[in-house]
Image (cartoon, rainbow, N blue to C red; front, top):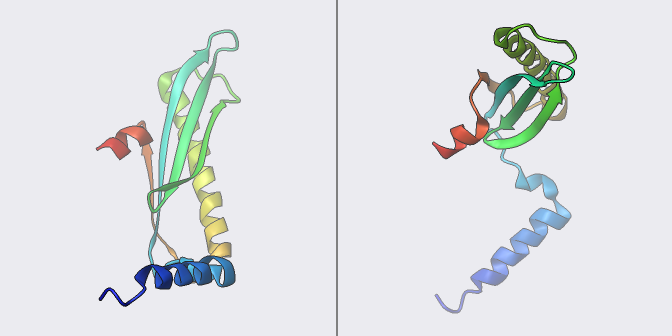
Length: 126
């Protein structure tokens, strides 16, 4: 067993994978699972009275899109602020879905979930 150069073989495969054929790094036939986490803060800007929306989208557990923006309209309630955040996240999920279909025709999006009010960090810690 000690006569077999495992480290050299692994190094050669890594070189081939990264430098000559980067397409062999990707899993083929793996289902794509898109998950979105959204939340909003009601009227966090006291001067403009605008709420803040935040969202994180993960693809198979890795964050691919994240943002925190001030909402364009003034919400009258927490429920309205959450609704605006959910609508923005749904539009973002549709854009991600369309981009994934263009980029990767073989792998189809298996599941898409948006979890309102649930923190991405809380989910990862469980």
